[in-house]
Image (cartoon, rainbow, N blue to C red; front, side, top):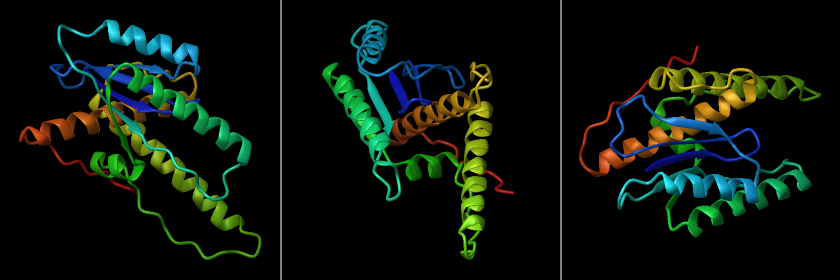
Length: 192
C-alpha cells in the first residue's frame, strides 16, 4: 500500500494499493490527532492484502521564523504523534520536503520579487497571492491526475489538503516506479 500525507488540521491522507490503476486512489481529510488518527491508521492496516508492505510519504515539517509559538508547538506535537503512529505500525516512512514533491509534480510557481514598501503591505499581499497560486496549481494538478476523487469542495482548505495528499502519494508512486526503472512522465504547469 502506498500512502501520501499532508499533515495538519486541514491536511489529508491519500492511499492506494501498489498495483492500483492510475487515477484511482482514496483520500480523507485528516482525522483529529491522537486516538482518532491511530484508530484510522489501524483501520488502513487491516486493508492490507496478503504480505503487502506499506510505504508512506509525508510532507516534512519545519519551524519557520515568524511562525507563532503556541500554534507551532501544538502542530509539531501532532506531527510527531502522527510519525510515531506510522512507525508503531511498522510502516516505512519517508519525510519529503514540500519543495521536492512540488517540483517533481510540477506545481511550483515562480515568485515575482517585490520591493519592500514602508509598511510591508505590498510584500505581504504578494506572499498571499503566491500562496494562492501554489494552492490553485496543486488542486488543478491533482484533479487532472485523480478526476474521480471527492475533494470535499464544501471547504476550500480541505480541498487543498486532499489535493496535496494525493500529489504526495503520486510523488511516492513516481519515486517507486523510478527506483524500479519504470519511466514516469515529467509535468509542467503554466504559472501565469
